[in-house]
Image (cartoon, rainbow, N blue to C red):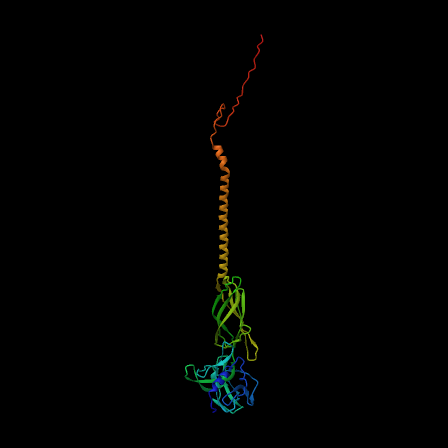
Amino acid sequence: MFALRPRLARAAAALAATLFASMLLAAPAAQAASDDDITWAVTPADASGPDTRGVIEQELDPGASRDDFLAVRNLSRGEVTFSLSAADGYYTANGRFNMLPSDRESVDAGRWIDLPETVTVGPNETVVVPFTTTVPDDAVPGDHAAGIAASVRSSGTDESGSQVGVESRVGFRVMTRVTGEIVPAYAITGVGSDYDMSWNPFRPGAATTTFTVENTGNAGLLVEGSVEAGTGSAAFPAGDAPRQMLLPGESRTFTVEVDGVWPTVFVPGSIDLVPTASDLGGAPVEVAPQSADAGLWALPVSQLLVLLGLALIVVALFWRRRRFAAALARAREEGRASAVGPSAAAVGAPVAPSSGSPTSTGAETRRFRRTRTTAPTTESS
C-alpha cells in the first residue's frame, strides 16, 4: 500500500470539499505536485472504462438485481489501495448530495449495493470495478438514494493535539426508483413569522418567515414557490440560492425574508409552494400546490410616534391659540372699561342748584290738561 504522509490530510481534505455535488461528476483531474499527494477520481463506467454518466439512475422491481460498473482512476505518482463503500444518500441544505459517513449504518439503498471492499490502482491508471444492486422483495415503491465512494484514510491532529483518523472520499450518486405507485406528497409545518421594523416611518420593514417542509411521499421533490407578507413577496428559493431537493422521508427548515412590508398591525401572509417531481426520464410528475398561513403582528411603532408627535404639536398650537384668545378678550374688556369710566363718573355726580332756578329732582314731566270750554247760550224770549 502506498505510504501516506502528513501532506495527505491537506490534499484529501481539499478533495473532500468537492464530494457529492448536486450533479456529482468525477472529482476534477489534478496532477500530483509530489510523491506525497494522492489525487483520484471515481465515475460510473461500463466494462471498458468510464462512460458519460455523472450519476447512475435505475428503475428496478422489488426483488430485482442489476449489474453495473464504476471506474477508479489514480492520478497520483504511486500505487494506492482505495477502500470502496456504499451508503445511504441525502441532500444537504446547500443543495449538495452526500452519503452517510462510515461510522453510521445505512438502512436503505446503501445496503442494496454489493461491491469489493478495496481496489488497488497503479500510478496514472484506471481500474473498472463491477458492482450489483439488489432490491429487497419488500422494498417500498419510490425513490431511494445511495452513494458509492472510493476513500483513503490518514491520520491527523485535532485542535487539542490528539491523533485522529481522517477519511477522504470521492464518489457519485446511485438513484434507484422501485417500481409501483409513485405518490409525491409533502407537508408544511412549524410556520413562524417575525417583523423587523424600520425606524424610518416612511420606509417599510421586513418580515422573516420560517417553516419546515417534510417529504411525506415516495418521490424526490424539488421544493420551490413563494412567500407573501402584506405588500411584499419573495420567491423561494432566491435566484442565486441552491436548488432544494428533498428525498422521501427528509425534512428541512427554511427561512425566507420578505422586504417591503408595511406594519398594518396585522399583516396577512402565506407560504405558497409548488414543488416539482419527475420520473427517471425527466418527464414531470404532477404535484399538487399547497399553501400555509403565515400572517403576523406588526405594530406601526415609528408611524405611531410620528402621529403622537403631530398630535402633541396640534394640542400645543390649540392651547396656545386659546391662551392668545383669552388674553385678547381680557385686553378688550380692559379697553372697554377704560373708555366708559369718565362718562359714568359725570353722570353719577350731584349737580348744585343755580339761584333763582327751580331745583329739578328728576326728569321734568309735563302734564297736558284738556280744557273743556262751554259756549254761552242765548235764550230767546
